[in-house]
Image (cartoon, rainbow, N blue to C red; front, side):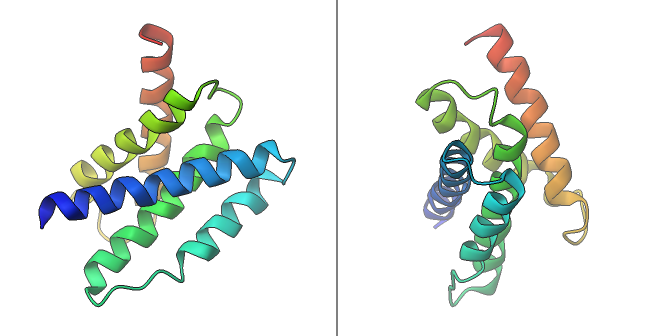
Length: 123
């Protein structure tokens, strides 16, 4: 069950990153692209409300990260790696923050900084 939840989070994060990234590259305003993806993500429903909250939050957080990194992501590999990083940070930090205020933005920021460091060092 934990593995399937992790996979769902990675898929949701991949949707958030990739769709926002590609909308921006279709010349959609970056804020509008992120808002659209967050809006679409708000319609995802599960019977388990905690799972539903996690999926919606990870989509929003991922689309937010894609805004900041849209000029730095240069390959499909990087589009694939960023969601893994976001999900790892989300799972690691979600118990450190209470509520959603600041948590998702902070996770998106940390993911972006770590992504840039990894990109400069390894990619």
